[in-house]
Length: 179
Length: 437
Image (tube, rainbow over all chains, first blue to last red; front, side, top):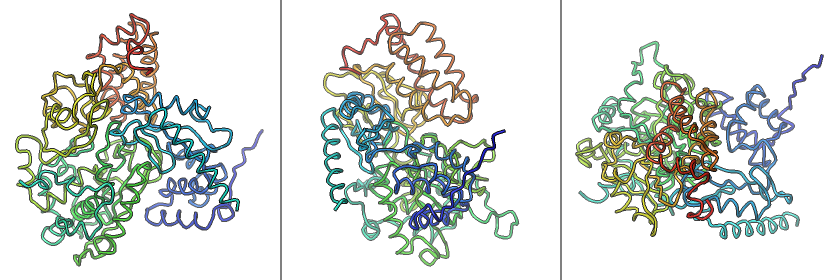
């Protein structure tokens, strides 16, 4: 008979002091430690790009939570990534206002330019493509979000310009961090 | 009536650089909170809210004062008195076609902070949360800034303005899911759980966040409070004497000339919003129909243009005012494709808890996809009609699936010919005219 082993990761060795402090602050303003779970997933994702299994185990340890329960939370929410993503995650709005104003052509232009489909990451790890429900920019549709930036009035041409610029900026940032 | 009286909620909006606390006070802000805390008992404020006729702006239109009155108000000596109560601002704006709360959050964050103080004081809450959707980064940063300023000026924290009242206010940014806008799902999300709506009763007013009495109100609803307190009930009711009380932030989007938001006295007609404010359709396009208040409302048609946009009138026309944001369908966009897009949204955002919604919404997507691709049959229309019944109110755990039924059922009625053409012609008749949709 196969024995299922439970994995635990001691959060002290895995999470940074800043991550722990931010998560503890969130826990302090809530009535239960569990209530800091979503914030904890977001904090770790902000630092590490995505939520790996190891991150999940460590957060569960820190918040005294069952790993399966935290996984249930992590997979419920659209903005938590449980797979590695590229440097820039493109969230293109596919809801009704963007549909009516032609986001389909914008999406097609992104797919062609980056040669990826929804859920995929470019081979240079620069871009991941995801959809997003209504971004609340319906008066300036079609809309997309990359990181914390929202881009409006997109056209198949403007979106390629934006991606090209971002790609160049990322190259510059990498060069700076190499120095 | 001066212009700021006609547009109380948006008079201070500045999307470039919202008013600081000092500027907000100089413009007349925090006077509503001052009046509540210094001159009124919580019961008196509650009476004002009730008398004002304020109704919830999040979509349901439930009277706010009545909602609040279900919170048990027990004496300090009562052994059953809960040790805390909570006020939560629902800033999880995610109804497709709705972007009004974003304006208030980004453009006048102190107005919401002031509203939370008034609401918290009335309910006897010492902790309040703003539940903000994760994608509203600018709003998050501006709210945090406003809250910081309010703490520094003793409008938050302990012994607010020397009154002995204490309130701590926090921003919780969500990780994205439409269902979080449902108030009991929102409470689960705040508790760090999957955002699945709770069974009611118990209602949140009795047992909500962490099992304590909780009120969840939409941002626009709350932003009315400072003005009701400051100017009084009579003034508030006089804004639109023949309709619902106060103003409404109406919106419009789609292929129209000037998509946007306008705060107007309640009861402006659809025509006024669409033509006088939004400039009407793009050149070369005709109005086909519209959703009056977000994705989960029934279609209305050109014949309904003179309907006042208030709760009763829109209901009489066969739809719901919802969030008051018009989503406009033109004659070169395919109605079937639009409904398919709406149902894809609901199918993706279903929490999966109850069968009619979890299975019904993707089933509708499958059938609609078939029809849109020209592979549908007449029998598919019966399936869709059956699904509308299968997912209707009373058969589901919450209002998400019935919300999906509203545009679907009304589209089957108003755009029946379009559905039939897809089936008869074996293709989408709009494909050739709209440029690759």
